[in-house]
Length: 376
Ligand code: ADP
Ligand code: MG
Image 1: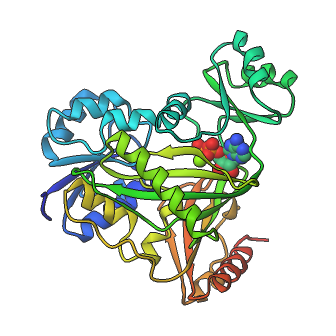
Image 2: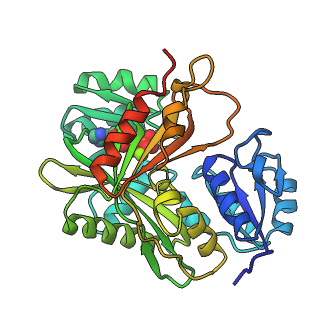
């Protein structure tokens, strides 16, 4: 067990790293963040911010020598970086576990190897793959880059096979997957923790609403039946076990109109759809990550109050700031801002949670507050 006072290394300096840093420092750990951005959300709050690239060997050496354990908040940390750091201290999760989630193609094959169903897809690595891919997938479909996509970026909807070539060229002919567009009844996600000994614990299932490919709202508990919630938790645990994952990870699911559960994607880190746990669970996903990487026992993930989380994107800032009055006047709402210096359209600047014993009341209040935020 790594006790409070030990130093944890965090690869990545975004909001997930920031909320991890708060949780770790609250428990009395020291945190060193390695992140190139000098103004990063996590770097601002860490004991030490090493401003360096993820492949800067000298910086990694300096980082590794000071840390008792290293973890991550960003799925695109190069596998070589994680591998390199293992000569200094444990790295949790491992390079192998993280790598699977870095490539949609690898990820989908992995999901299949777990006996689970990914969204129907076909690989397109080069122009010549297009006819065969189109014959396997029903349209409308979505062409997605295999790597480096997030918040709906690197995706183009294609309504007809004749549109695929132009979309592939627009995505610069990098490796892609052609994915069937699913008729969604709901999107849900499971955030779970897995210990070095292989024990697992899931947070309550979250129901997610996206706008323009970006998470907009998370509702917990998800409005689904108990059997489906259990099925999602079992699937997520099967994936985590097969990955031999250590830490906190997330699995995103689609529920089709036919009631089928498909795996959309996974994240080898804490997840936006788990932010509600900061305010509505006994233990947050970030504290649980601290606990897992330091080999502490699990914290209780029970939901103490129904909750709605709303993301705050840069669009709400306009030329100044959102109008905070209603949000700040709501005694059962909690504002979280990430300390980002520049608001851009689509950029995640913060979130808020509204808690209420009656879930419908929480939804109505969160929606009402959200509608008062934009400057007019
Ligand atoms: P990202 O890595 O950007 O989160 P996702 O594949 O999760 O990429 O896509 C973002 C969102 O776009 C999903 O949560 C969903 O709302 C929508 N979406 C993506 N793929 C599909 C699909 N095949 N069918 C229906 N909706 C989809
Ligand atoms: Mg996603």
